[in-house]
Image 1 (tube, rainbow, N blue to C red):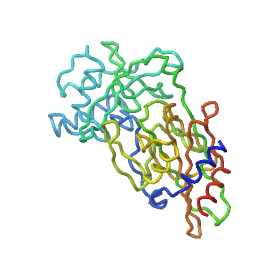
Image 2: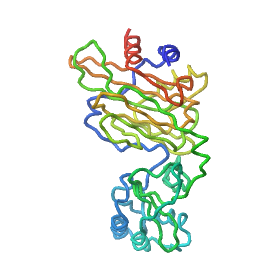
Image 3: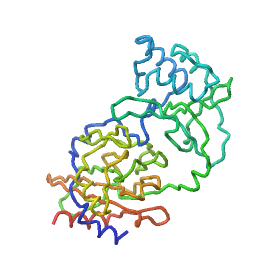
Image 4: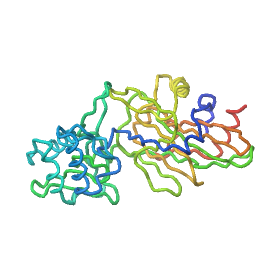
Length: 343
């Protein structure tokens, strides 16, 4: 790690943008790498999702009104359910409430390393939202319920995201594509300007291609794991990647050029970006799929001190930094780059 950190120092020890104060006050919609969940906060229960569907259809019987707290409207749910459970014979949005209420918890009956494919919603370059049935590959999460159709015996929907379609993926995916991890200090201790008022952390992956859906997880000290990226940075913009719209959290354009110069080919922010205000000391862990080895997972610490001084430190890791699939950024790395970046 040390060799790469020092080699990369002149390139990425530059400012990332945004206000730490504004970050603490704003909690924007999280960013999902693969695409939108049908309902980011889950379905709650089939009864609750059915009731939301009924309210949507009461306002717009054609099925074009998005369900409360969701990203999908009844027409998108109908399309996804038709593909996930064709033997159910659904043909109209008006059939959805009864169908959803009929779903019951089901045991996926899979091995401990099994992963499942499910759907998501994607926005085209023109902004048109559509269903992608093979969008996400991941294991069933702890505490997650899989609901199915008791008549057709089809697994139909995941409780945590309300994404229709639950099909077991080939186990080769697990063994051939192990996840990577970047460990980093959540609240680095940096001598100099007195008491630290706030530390905002931004993250992104700079690469040539879109990043796959597997492995994404963020573990922070004192907080439960999250599987989508928090978006507390006040700056965001929309780009087109792989023919679809992707929302980018924070402005990384100067860092994109520095990373491209380092790698020798053009890389850009892909479908992975996020930002949060750190609260607890300790080590945070950022889990990623191994296709990021062709690019640079990048972190930026934005530190505000009691005397009003503000510093930013940006560190990227590449494939040479991963040992047994883990890259470790230490407080010493942050301190070294901090001093070098402010000379």
